[in-house]
Length: 349
Image 1 (tube, rainbow, N blue to C red):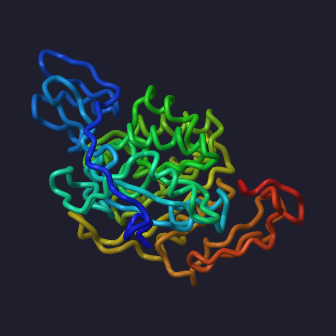
Image 2: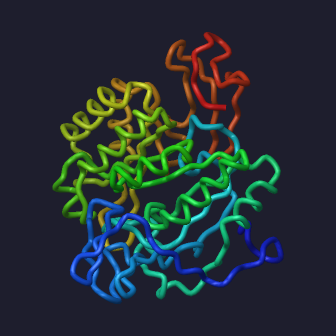
């Protein structure tokens, strides 16, 4: 459902916004938003395609320009331990600071503003008011494309949303510098970080980025005590080796905690990658390995006949949340998110 369609909202004219986090170097601008540190010439954009040098000023061309607006189940982000069963108004724009060959949302993430003709130009106050008006809506999720790339709009919306008592969620690849991350952390309640692999060679070859900054982002989120879940897309022959997977789950357990929620997602051929889809046997094997080190491991993008959908309490092992697709039942969870059997805290609620 498009929550901004019809007469529910009026649209504003596009607003060009000066970007944050940059400096000028010899008539070019150096963007400091993400670790690419793009040096951008006059009239050009960075790798993300949306941050542009206009006469020595870096502007965010996609400020307030939304490609997607939908009311989604929170589980679709995916967030399984953050207000389970609730819905959240989800928004995205265009652009990304990675160039993943396997991109699942390439129609919006791998294009710039002038390549996408279907924008809804929505002011901050209007979006927050709409989110506030939807009955039982949890808040606003920044998702679909990489939200770091519409940072200024996300920051303005998140500040106003928090003022209005709404929750904010960021679904991100984690490729962001320390200062912008620290700036927005107070206004984001939950994160799902897409961890692409656990080798820098994969990141360099398949995403045009690096692993280390993503690990640093994960550590900052954990240190800020924000709700954190991780998604790992399993691509056959590229990031599914047992050795690499063991190293990744060891690092997560040791640095982020055994209670970190971990989603294994099935890959399907998309964009520039034609490898066959992930075999269920691979997902089941990695699920079993991850469960030895992490308390909450789930399977995504798969039929419900496979395990890895329900939530078992990490303490008493009772099934406390049942899922069939996006239908969610929470018979074993108390009003404060604890297990009804042993009072162990399981979810935020």
